Image (tube, rainbow, N blue to C red; front, side, top):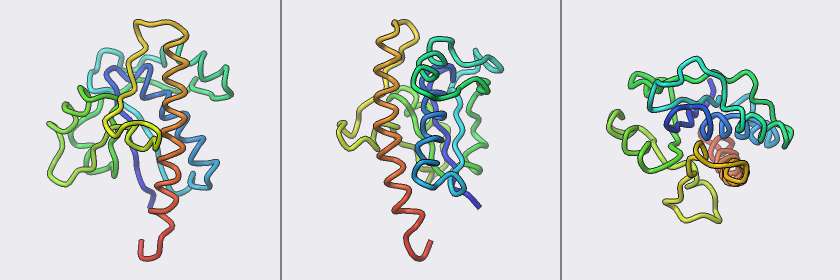
Length: 161
C-alpha cells in the first residue's frame, strides 16, 4: 500500500500538474517512487480532460520533465477516503478543500514543505503571466518537492509505520 498525495490548484492545468510531475521525479530520486503515489486536480472543473497549459508543459520540458500525459480533473469530496495528503497551491484553494474535507483530513499548503519559505507561502497562479512567472512557479515547486521528499523519507521509513 502506498502513501497517496493529491496536489490541487484552481483548474489543474498550470501549478498542480507542474507540481505533480516534479514531485514524482523528486520522490523517485529519493527512492520513494514505489511508496508514494502522486496525482493532481483542480477545485474547479472548467478544464476537465484538457492537457496541461502549453506554457507549463514547455517550462517543464525545458528542465527535463515530461508533462505530456496530463489531463485535467476536478477534485471530488469522496477522494478524501483515497488520499492521505492533499496539498493546495494557495490559500483560496486551501479554504475550498478544507470546506470539503472530513474531520482529520490532512490538507496543507504545498509550499509549507519548503524550509526556506514562510509556512503560509503560496504558489502564485502564472496563468495570466509570462514565461518568467512559470519559471518562478517551477522553482517554488522544486524547492517544496525536495522538502516534501525529505519529510516523507523520514516519515515512511521510520520504524513502526
